[in-house]
Image 1 (cartoon, rainbow, N blue to C red):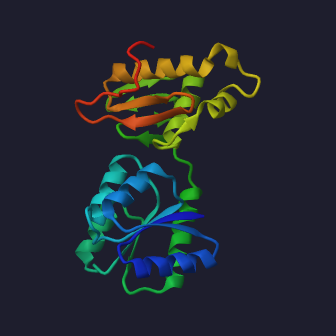
Image 2: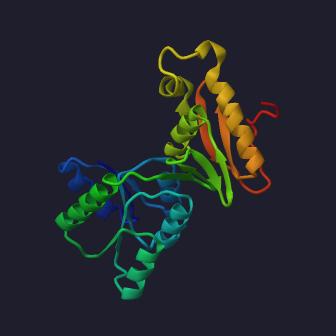
Length: 236
């Protein structure tokens, strides 16, 4: 299991990491709120432990923005703020559990294992990145009231891109997952279907694009208002 710990007390963070390491769990630490938010968006984790009082961005803001972006990593808030209003705000923002400081390491470990098990036991029918969603039951690309049905190969490519949550997906990996080793690589099949998907995203007017990294692969990218993808080709 791999979890993300966003905690600005280095001493506490290192103590948690060592205890979890002894129990077979890898812990990545971020001590800054904004950096932790970016890490949670960039990487996939089995669970997240989140402090509330952090430099640059509060834990509440981190969790709210992650949930808005479709990041559903199971999250435990770990905080000295133990008033009922704080707990209710945490749960309403999208927390799966809330544990006050001081706490027992064994209890924290048990709670992390519990929320990770619950998450792994349910397969989501909707995948989301930024302002687009992919309905796994209908193979539709969704944004607001817009819905576009994807072909089987378009769906497989988009599913792999969304599951990576903005991370790089190599062309060879897509070749293997969409067509298999004996697929029509000589005809640049991946490039053709990525081109179809990019046109559909532009037609929907969403703030999400597929970036092409020459010689490496593809990744999804959230577009800021007024910005354009410097790597996007004007013709597909």
